[in-house]
Image (cartoon, rainbow, N blue to C red; front, side, top):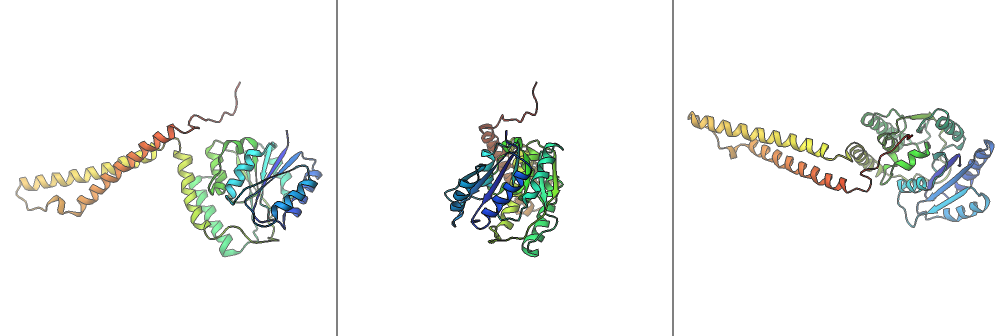
Length: 317
């Protein structure tokens, strides 16, 4: 079995690829690692694939897959995870900002210290302050509070995984930002981090624009819901639906009792339908019914999912 699989998603990185692959090979040879390098070309429009083809002639450990169009980093990682066969899987970016010299220590931490996942921590970053570093700090703080995972740099591209981890999770959309969260909710609790050296960008520009500030929070909500309630959606929708229904029903009952009491005692009173509170109560009842029905439909969908009875088994004797 191979010791290492190095999965590298890329988009328009023709200038950095020769240097990156040569650097990785040098580190692998220095430490006598059996390895494979898996390059996933995410629909590059430059000559990245031509460079990869020339590198393949030189390095037998190199594997490569080219997408017909740009699908995104998460799709590239998922395909790379499917192909990976190494005992430890390393992910890194292709822009030379991740240092291959970190790989031996990441491998050691997975094998010897028995971690399931190690995330790199770019403690010193060579990125713009306002467009990269400050949003990253806010993002990491938010994810840490919601998920409970104590990582300083959740989105660092340089990570190491035990093979079973990448074979047990599914990455799609923009979920590559939340792989530690997906791993934790799949049952892999030993998640750590390592301070890694962050290189200044040598070629090209960042492939992530301002849209990540919108997609990031939305994906965080998605991954939080999926990991906690993906197999039991009624526990989410049903609780909120019941609560809304009880509140609406309780307010409506109060208004009705008040109306009857005042009428019985000849106390002047407004019609129930003239009171704004009645319409708020009616809205709560309608929302409660809709949420409950949404949970019921989600349960039906969940029960027909192909992986509804898929459970990860750690040991069997």
